Amino acid sequence: MIGYDIENPSGMIEINGDEIIYGDETVAYKVDIVDFKAGDDMAVSDTASLILPGPPKPGQYSLKVSNGNEEDILKGAVTFGETPPERRKAIIIAGGGDPSDDLWNATVTCANEAYLALLSQGYVADTIYYLNSVSETDADGDGKKDVDAEATLENLEYAINTWIRHPENPENTTDELVIYMVGNGGIDDSGDSGYFEMNTVTTTDENKGRLYATKLAQWLNDLQPDAGSKEPDPEPSVTPKKIVVVYDADRSESFLSSETLSVPKNGERYFITSSSENERAWFLENGTFSFSYHFWDFVESNGYLCKAFIHARDMMETDQIAQIDTNTDGEADEIYERGIGENNTIITINGNEMEENIPIGRGRVVTCVAPEIEVCEDDGFLKITGHDLKQLEDEGISQETISQLGSLKNRAYKNSEQFKSDLKETVGELTDELSSMILELAKKAEPMIQVGDTMAFCTKIVSDASDVGKIVARITLPESSQVTFRPAEELESDEDNVIYTGKYEKFIRPGKYTISFQAAHIKDECPPSEVKTITVNCLLKGDISRNDRIDLADAVLALRMTAATDPIEIENPSEIDVNGDGEIGLAELIYILKELTQM
Image (cartoon, rainbow, N blue to C red):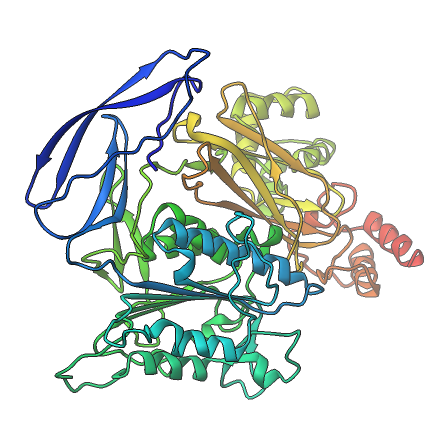
């Protein structure tokens, strides 16, 4: 199906013409597209079909459609003549299966997204083996169940050792095998072997319900039988030629080892893990903000492995460290993408430029550019501490004024003039020089708030604003569950749809909060922007000992500083003072004692 954007949705498309132009490797079928005005008796259509003429050479051909301004291409869309289509197969495993587990819904969300992405890249239902303990799962929304079997070790063994091998024709090979595992993972008590929880419901024996890295290694090496061998094989019989493994779970890097990734002599193997060996994997917003969801969402519109990995890794880099091994040495690769002009990039792996991209399926790429955003440059979180406090005192600003400045510390500003206006409203008339100095302090200050405060934030679009459908902010609380169902907050735009603002009022406990911003493209099939992130330190008033609670240790420290008989130095005291004077003294001691008596 070829889709067209129509300014008048009630219009109609007609295709005329049959001029055929043959090239050595291409066949161009020139047509005229005519828009008609809508009438009551006219059908509405945004699709067109045509009979493709046979090319001069057999093989697989891509289908490209263009209107002169935009184009889209579907690689490997049609096969002519003697060359059989590429044989692609995929195995998706939604691990776990316990509805009472907070992670389960997120697991299914990610697994279903992988299913849709693979369909977009040329896979069909018969070439995807979906293991899920909920047999009625409908991944593509067509009203039919898409699950092939329960998620068990036995069923996975069947899928790998029997289903992909084309038993009806043993000489046939699989060109590409994708294995995607998502759910709970860990490392065994010995600390030597990583495992993936296949099933936690119908299988009570953990040894039968867990897939260990060593077992997966054995199966993969059986598929590519000369793995690790340096001797030439006169009759290569590798099946499949290419294996891609994507594993999203806690401590998933534990699967990334030389034992798991023995080098296949006559094939390729790529292994992706979402987290380091000592990290949890995050599945925020019911899984839609996670490494593998970002990965498959990108694949759906851009079917290249390394680009999808970089995109998903960068999306989650503040929470976890994703890894990729492209040369099967059991070591994570250093992989980067850099621009080389408008809309062109180069990917380097371990310092070497990639000669060609690694496709998943067709390697289809939707021809639209992701929007770009950034946190507003003039956002200010004023923190009057240390050297900054001395600087203000040297300028003759009174302690009363400095105390009033504390009320500005949680404000975000679209521009410098707005900051100065709010500054004047708060503390009265100041010289331009002094206002500018305070503004500079605000710009360089690290975001800092106290429990119970409200914080405003601001982002702006730096690409074409008309491409943006919305911008959302996601808040990750300190030490929160790896699975959260907190909805993303949609930000409000200004009249020009360039500046987007919002606020957060629920700083209910101390610690580091992560605020992530992302813009969605106005077209669903186009990729979103990269995530822009800020980290905000939330501190507790009176927490002099910095242990995230009020206790006797804080009372003792406040007493020592108040008495001044045993002076101690407290770093950045204004971060935890209670009256905005930037010092620890009697007010803090009284506040702490009141808090202790209420416990």
